[in-house]
Amino acid sequence: MDREEFSTLVASGAQCASACASVVYVSGRYHMVMGTGLLGIHTCYTVKDDNSEPEPSSFCNERIAQKAADHGTSYGAIQMWQRTTGPDQKSWIGPEVACKYGLCGPPGFDDTRAVPSFDCKAATYRSELTICSDKRLARNEASLSKYYSQTIKAMPPSEKDAFRAEQRAWLMYRNGCEADKACLLHRMNGRWNEVMEKWGKYALRTNSAQ
Image (cartoon, rainbow, N blue to C red; front, side, top):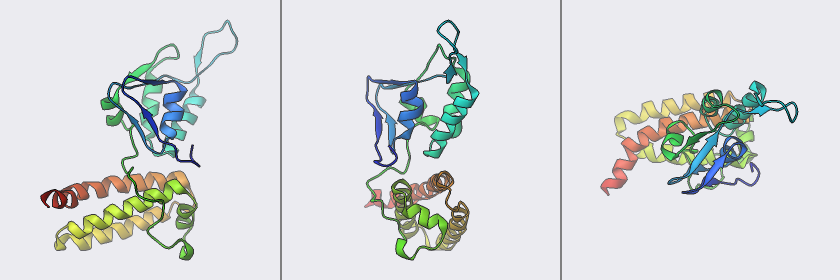
């Protein structure tokens, strides 16, 4: 799924439960629950034999939550439901709750091509080389850069210098991830939220006025 960049949509009236919800669904580049669709999440469990009761597995829950985090979903968004729902139950989650608790996304999904904003042939930082080698990271970087550029063009001149300084500081923070893909994705998603707050305030308002 990572190589081909599948998207995962739970259509209205459909259900995606157990491994479908906690593993396959969150692995999609873009994942969304629509209409009356539902996600069903429960704790991961083990069964010793045919006659034994299923027992929650903290190790399995940890691995599933970490996989979600590695794909840009909040670690706690999966863990919360795993901790509160036993192996013989399911927490059924509709789109409103799913998106509120970080199970929709990534927020930066659009039609941006997976071509980084910088020249990959001239890249020297390990973080940049890693972004260039990974389509998901490249697309996120390109999308983030696009909206940053739109935002700074639309904001008042008095705020541009501070926004540029903030971006330079963030780039140093991003580069601190080195070649850690999960770290890069997490930090880009965090910066995306910060940029989109300003984008909604300036660029979106400007486009709407036009």
